[in-house]
Length: 74
Image (tube, rainbow, N blue to C red; front, side, top):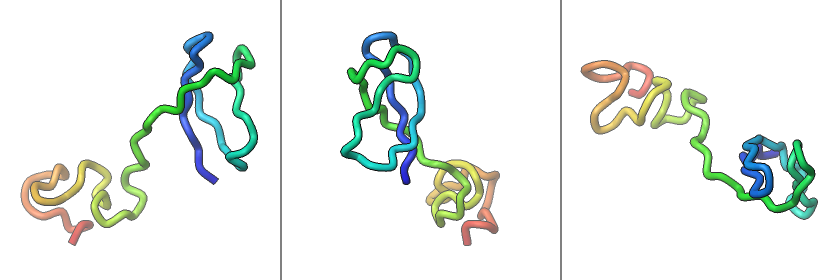
């Protein structure tokens, strides 16, 4: 079940919402408006994905986890 980030166009509040069923309308937690913009969010980093195992930017071609090769990425 994905967690999405939304911005309410009515009151400008930004919030996250667990969306269990995409057919159910999402409403603003503050004002109740359905006029929302789904925001593009960065994915979780350091969750075991091979390209982000060091917990920072993708490790190749130049690792952001310190000079040289990141042992968690190889």
